[in-house]
Image (tube, rainbow over all chains, first blue to last red; front, top):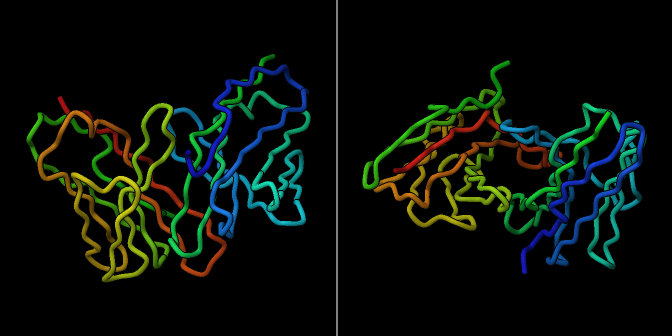
Length: 110
Length: 113
């Protein structure tokens, strides 16, 4: 079983739609959680950290469920510019390194 | 700001050839990483260096060696390249004890024939 699992998609949605991505992780000792965004043929960039209480940044909302070892990302009012691959990322304090999911591809259509 | 700089950006090798990917960061970060990215596999950690003078194996270290030359530079060496090492390689850095945000270089696209 992969340490971090995501639905690869693609998710094809119209502009203005709300879309949700899910991610599960296997290591219950994981300490920190993130969503990264990666545009085609570019490097990944941090989208947002995920906090236990859930957090929101504009149209983006991230949630963490430690009991179920589950992370989610909700994008409201999708824009064409949201088209990208979204990577779920987990940090284990012991390893001091980040583990990446394989990503979920989002295509927002006009 | 340069951030994380990787060279070369593209390279084609023949099986058995050797090469070194260079990485440098100017953000005074303690920790540096090398990942490879293959279609459908996501980013997989090859090696990392938590601080100057230390290196540790990641998920897929076989066929690679690394050197943390100083705080700024972390190189990745392929001693005898194989077609299975065809991939996009990303160097990244972060400030230990910080937010955990990784800053990536633009990637190095390597093809081994």
